[in-house]
Image 1 (cartoon, rainbow, N blue to C red):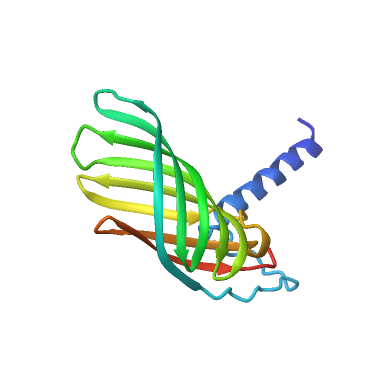
Image 2 (tube, rainbow, N blue to C red):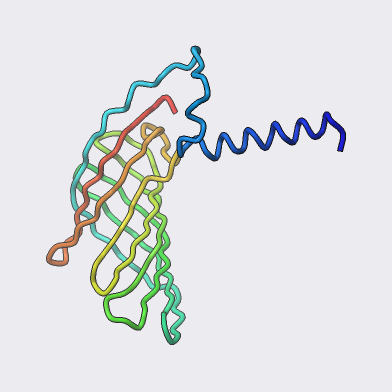
Length: 175
């Protein structure tokens, strides 16, 4: 391999390593650029309310050990979020009572604290013999309209068969 090509390969490999290690502190010794402008931290806001959800089973694959399912979902949000959503959910139910998992993606269309637009939320949840763990986050850069630059996390609560949410978010319209 020629010196020129080998030099380009080494340079590319070095940049890949810096990029990969940058989030773990591997590139902390690099000198700071004086021309970098720090963005002001976006203020975290809170929205809460209730929602109704309608799940429609689309398919099911029952097998020993775990059964797989697919559902469409439709929601109606009230409160800080006044919107509807449509999405798809994949589920798994194990043979052990109370152990299951799901992933879902849904597009929310409407208003968040009076601002109009759409955004997409990604869900991941597991239940281990009844103990639940869930993550619901806004897909980066999925906001449109007045919700462009939206980032956030939602907590879903279910009490006495009623669904409610707590939504912590930031909105950076400069994105």
